[in-house]
Length: 169
Image (cartoon, rainbow, N blue to C red):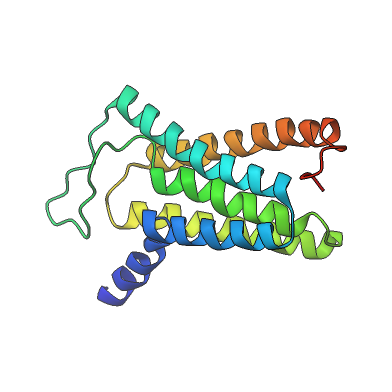
């Protein structure tokens, strides 16, 4: 079904480097404008750390991508973990956590569910297009979520220690 391939090709773009960079810069600019410097640090650490982790793990594991007779897309570099899944989990997860924090519980659940759905679609698109194994995508999700959880824990604790610092709201 060519239309479905077009849909998943478009969805997978949301995990590519250029959209990730553009979305990150826009989010950082909004946070800077609102003087939310601790949140800027959280978002920046989430995205840059996810990129570094992806690179290191890909080099460490060095797993080749699936080879298909008639591929829908061609991936480059190593396969494990899926960088799209890992970095998307970190970026969209961080943004969702920042947006959801001040909301009422029902709205918070909606924002977090939307982020999970978006990241899930990006991961599934990698499988549909045949550029990753299921384990690549699941590992990307797991590592990205673990990185986000670690940052949330560390930076939440640091925020209480930095409360008197003039740049930290």
